[in-house]
Length: 311
Image 1 (cartoon, rainbow, N blue to C red):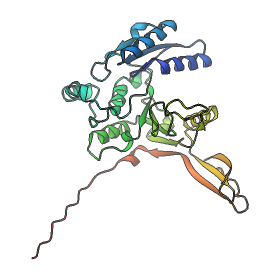
Image 2: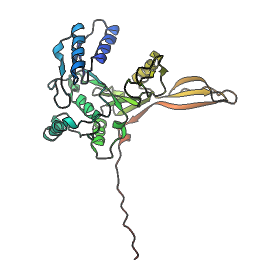
Image 3: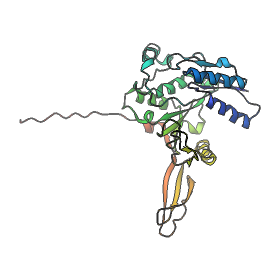
Image 4: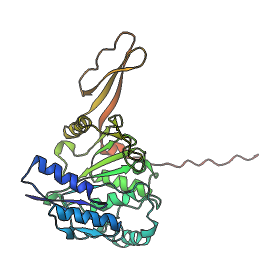
């Protein structure tokens, strides 16, 4: 069976390549057709060469700005992934994006709303949503790496808030996973993986899972740029298990009387924390929680008070 995967910010094609290798390890008979778009000419050329070596159709990799000139405008995909630039303004393509938002509305990519011009990462989120194969045709799932601002920027009624409202009211968010700081070459900020799907399993419908993996890291022996931490295979397996089992969990850390860590273990729902050593304590913090979509809704109310005068 052939499946399609798409990266709208493909770079040199690294994420597409890793996905392909991972899939073939698990199922050597699987066939994955890769698609991508990249703005930087040099990265685009490297990506195209890499796809050529892998036997992919190089016509599936296009050059250009994904937001203003969608190179795969007529396509929908089974799976997608993206690590768009963090906190980069979209002023250069503002005219085209606003035109699509105004003229096409929900028939275009940006119907739900537009974020502030200083950060275009949520435009890539909307772009990927527009590429989802309809649920009746098998549906889609995608992962996108975002910084913290899409989680909290903008009050009720703002473009960012309306985009968040859209993804929650349409029950598209499966999980948001908080990663450690210092995970990327060019920035040390906290990042989050959003997993969205329009083919949720019945037990996930109406729910969002939040996983705090910010404490899951090991120090790198050599730090390239700002990247000083990495997830171990065990960390990845734990996150995957929590997501796959849709499980709530806590992290129990056993400390001695000096505050030194003696042990750390994951507690699934219903499991009890270990006993504290003499003079020490056990610190329990939430790692995975599940919430109903409507628990994220809020309204802003402005309260005005007239000034008192001498009368």
